[in-house]
Image 1 (cartoon, one colour):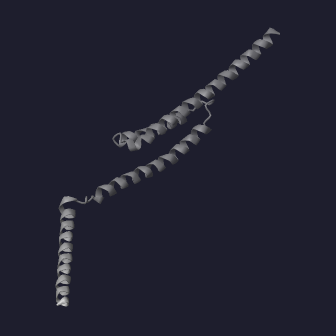
Image 2 (tube, helix red, strand yellow; image 1 turned 90 degrees about the horizontal axis):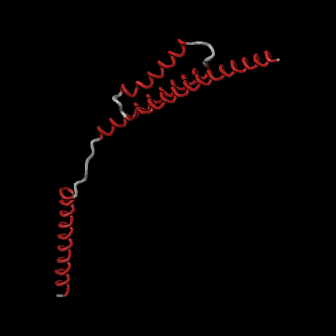
Image 3 (cartoon, helix red, strand yellow; image 1 turned 45 degrees about the vertical axis):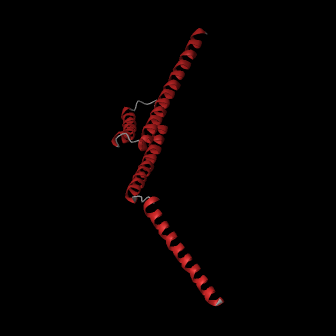
Length: 152
């Protein structure tokens, strides 16, 4: 009699636990599937954006080499000598670097080309003005020495 009641009590608990687990599992599946929707992202868009940035970085490294070469060319130029062809070539290459921004529909990723072109133009103009100032200073000193010699 005691064992019969124990068996009945045991099986009631087992039935309750199984029913509870079944209801819990169903509630979890329904809530995850329909209520709390897990977002699915499209990787194609993300991969195309990454490829776009890789292209920008590749083009930026190419332009960096070109800018360094142009910087050296400006550094080595002698502005005392009238070199119209070299100066025109430098300004043309600077404008090609600047045009990169316009070629890519004014995309902000290519803003580096405008900034570097502005810096190169500033450096070129400063170097040219410095050379002109040195030349004018030398002329003034020569004239001053000539005036001093004439006064004696």
